[in-house]
Amino acid sequence: MKFISLLFFLSLTLFARVSVEETAIIEKDSYPDKNTNQLKEIVLQKAKLAASKEIFGEFLSSETIIENGQIVDDVVRQRYGGVIHIEGTPQFTQTQNTMSVSIKAFASDKDLKDVLPHDIVIKNFTYSNPSLPIKDLKQAAHDAFIFEAIRTKKPSVRNAQEAKHLALNINIQRESFDMLTLSYHIDGTITYIPAFLNSYIPPSHTTDTLQDSTQNKQDFYGEWQGFLRDWKHPLLGTNENATDVNILITSFSEATIDYKALDCGGDLLVVEKTPTKLVFKEVFTYGKERCHANKKLTLKRVSPRSLELILENENQKPFHSKVYLSE
Image 1 (cartoon, rainbow, N blue to C red):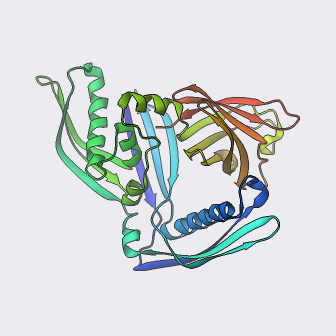
Image 2 (tube, one colour; image 1 turned 120 degrees about the vertical axis):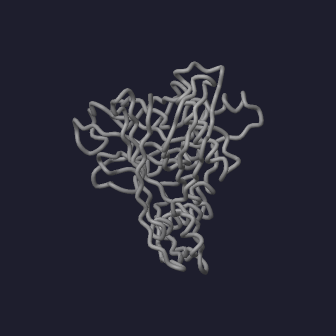
Image 3 (cartoon, one colour; image 1 turned 180 degrees about the horizontal axis):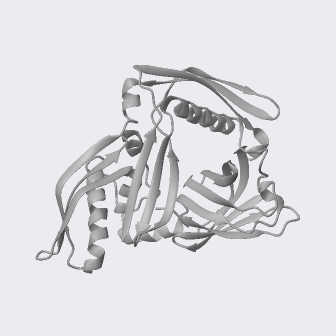
């Protein structure tokens, strides 16, 4: 039996309009295959992201998964989002080694309201499935309840897994099981944030259900988590160290890594990709004084929900670990 408890905090100050000025900078040698226009786009996106965080704040969700009375996973997730508008023309500056941009960004009152939590209240939701064993009905009913609730606000949501990703808070006030009809009845409230709902794009699209299922097993999209044990080389700046790692892949050109315990990480730049392997170069954007970026980071498909992680540096034996797809 699995229960998910979610708590949230949103740092946000509401005004009729909020404006900020942000400057972002990147090192050109971190993107050796990009031309000037592509470098401008990358640094502009970094400035927009910084402005978005400044205006809308950061949304933290604490998720605790309990099975058979024991906590099996406890994760704090960080999200940010919302629509920002650029005022005037971005001012780009480049040197031999860097590209930077300064922007003026603002958000309207409607934009700010779209990052506030909204509730979906559903009464007397009924679920039955004669093909399922009774022991699986409760979890299936919860999944269906979340899916149907989110679909009222985002009809394009395709399955329960996507719906769970978008349902920021799940509060079931009442549930009962009817032995005569083998059906669950649920009253509850789903909390969501419109800005996250509107900006979410599923990782892959196909018209055939079987093809879609196969594709999902082959792509690398999602949040991957693991723990790197028995560290034996100075990759992270100290020997005999270990840390938890979080890799987020939103597309083959957008990926980040976070070594949580050491508070360092940054971007993952794609060097090579195949249906079963991704090879990255690490570019740290924070914690450089504590950690040393890998020369090469490889993810290899092990199963639909697990990847082998290989870290390589010059004159060092490759380090092997695993990361697992987060719900």
